[in-house]
Image (cartoon, rainbow, N blue to C red; front, side, top):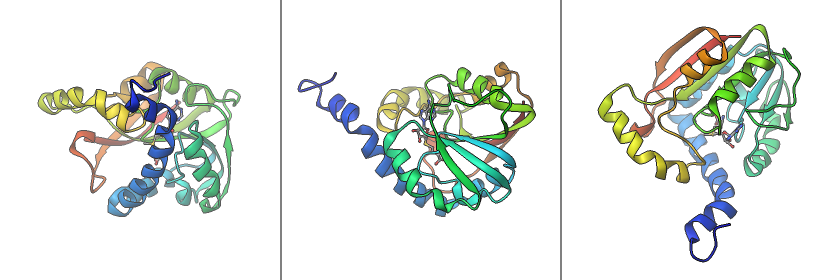
Length: 217
Ligand SMILES: C[S@@+](CC[C@H](N)C(=O)[O-])C[C@H]1O[C@@H](n2cnc3c(N)ncnc32)[C@H](O)[C@@H]1O
């Protein structure tokens, strides 16, 4: 456990998630107004039937679930979960918070029609296990909906992301800048993977590009 000789490590280990959660709530409100709200509306508008959202954070997607029947939310961070619980009423359909992580949820095989991930595959510990778990809990033919920032295809921008990533990870709740969610989805056996690049409005260049997409289980 980091202590006196590693004050930064101590702060991040003991208080980091509470600081990040408070900070994240503000970032969410600002970025939603700057353009991410419109992207959330598009993503979540396609979420139908029984829905699982992994890494729901402070519930930024909740207001947009008008076409779903029911939403289960998985959020392992206790500070985020506290805010999420206070915001459940923002969902137009019944929503509940479950246990588990993206890598391991408590739900049976084939339970859900839709699984949603927004800005989560950058942060999970194991992206391959998370993609496999999403496919396991989806009904055959069910839909994985995602919006994620990914490693840049531009070599210069990619090198910058690689250089900054170790510090970035510590500052932003474990977020990686160079992940490849499409490769993880392919590896997990998803098909019909469709993506488009979207603009989130005010957003750090290091987190570009952002892809909005869907995949079939
Ligand atoms: C950048 S936030 C995105 C929150 C939310 N999805 C949104 O769109 O605002 C990343 C979220 O992933 C969660 N997370 C981190 N590791 C996770 C894991 N292994 N399984 C599920 N969620 C995880 C974090 O606690 C955090 O809430």
